[in-house]
Length: 346
Image (cartoon, rainbow, N blue to C red; front, top):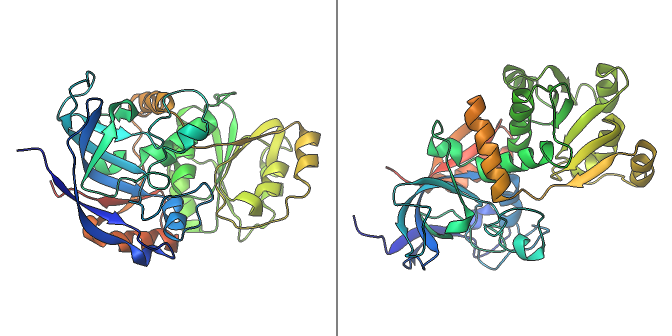
């Protein structure tokens, strides 16, 4: 088979909603010396994709982007200077293509796929070889496509400056992609997990994945007090904080002295955070912003996934032609884990 010269890709010519998702044909250039051409097999969606489609992504986005940040695929061509990769290798791309190791900076942030630069919702994608990681052997393309954003974010949160250890207690908010991965990593590491959700059905799934304590925050609005009760007043070591301003104050109540609140999302909307400085000070608690993670962390995480035999939770898979339906399903918040688009038919 020759190297493809065209690809079908989705773009967002307008950004007032995902109804603007438009398929078009584009030219595929040959890879430069340090690049690879990847056949995209699967793409997973996140909350970020919904807000990019609405033009509301707070970290900035280009005009008329190809959306999507998370893909799994196979290499179909390599540049002449690429040494570590070969045609046929199964790969994911790191979320920020230039985040190899260490701390993020403004230049690295500007290489985030699917917003500041074109993303992966396309049949073929040229990528710099330095952003690639190998897919764990036991994972399908659909499963592997869930790793770059949600899984690496969860791993970075729990394995950061003070890594999670056996016996720690972790609070995960909700049952979306990041929270489910955090639950799986925490359980695999010997930690106790407390999971919150508005749905008893979703909490049952969290329990099957190893969550020890379950809190329905609709039935228990003061869930922070329940967390303290469950931990005998101590609080949790780590909070996977995906709600943002709407939940941050309660997260600070629930964390232990000198514990970690990992700020990852803002799905709960606005809230009063005026007491936050005093809460942080009085508990000597760490509030840490998580901006996905590096390729080095991705590789470390994949070793954990392989060693523990972890399988990502894929809720539903949509064909490439039904991408809008995939966005609709994600927006409905019916899912547990990840929503995936199957791009390649073979």
